[in-house]
Image (tube, rainbow, N blue to C red; front, top):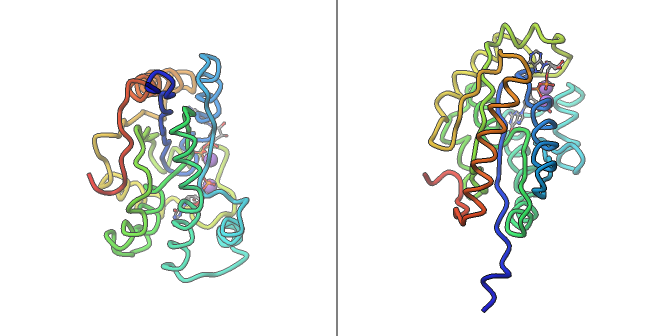
Length: 214
Ligand code: ADP
Ligand code: DGP
Ligand code: NA
Ligand code: NA
């Protein structure tokens, strides 16, 4: 029998939220926490600006190129699809993935521009569903006060308000809303609790599922 040699799978943990909600800060903290406990863990981010698709996305975000709204939507989605098989392999061989933004960003940001939400969800169908989505909840006004926005395309309060509204329509049972207005250490503790629970559930055999079928 080979069952006893099958490695428990890793968890797919996604952090979502508005620009400046604290995602990258908390992803780094969560990585050290899980690694410190001995769980094999990697930190990923979307968009992954390193790939050739990612470079097109990066040029668009920094206003160096202009693209039709549908076109850039599909590029963001393609950027997730190009990492899908590696993602599945990592999870199945026991590595937990912490992911800084995922399909929810894809749908919320494009829907906020006025694209049809079902059209926006369609290219995400079949990507791996997160075991946990930690939504860092903060008002667009408070987020904007943090360090100030840069020059990237979506960093405007009025637009972020619309994004926040669309995020709310995407909430499902995998989501936990975290008050991101609290001190970093408080946010960190809450995230640790949820993440550790999920890692344990996955170790015990929680099956992987797919977007957007539930
Ligand atoms: P995101 O990745 O969501 O854009 P960052 O993690 O880059 O956000 O954080 C944006 C800014 O806010 C950074 O300057 C960071 O140090 C600061 N920050 C993050 N979390 C908190 C917090 N809980 N309270 C106050 N400032 C924070
Ligand atoms: P970040 O590198 O996390 O700051 O993200 C860059 C910006 O791109 C940010 O404003 C959010 C936005 N974004 C992330 N993913 C997507 C996506 O799939 N589609 C769209 N339209 N925007 C996205
Ligand atoms: Na940004
Ligand atoms: Na970030």
